[in-house]
Length: 144
Image (cartoon, helix red, strand yellow):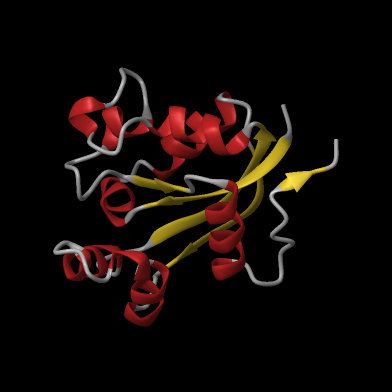
């Protein structure tokens, strides 16, 4: 397995609930380290650009509104097999389908407000890291 970087974000519903520390602790307990971490608000322009791949979908405007409704935590997570393993730790996108003990099972409110975002591929991880952390090396694979 390769040592990798991936992008993750704690969404506004989770920050509003006050579970940032618990989610970060979950990542640490699962063996992730943090290459970068930032607490911030996403602008409408950035949300529209970040989620541009969904612009023709009916949920796009609601997604932009939700993602700009409160603060978020942006993170670059690092560990072996980070991209795939983060997908497991987060759980299914729909929290009703998320495995017991996953972040979404524990702290999501709905399909839309599912508490966290995570890159789904090395291409997405590189793009998402570069989008929010342009001064940080976006190479996803890390030499061991």
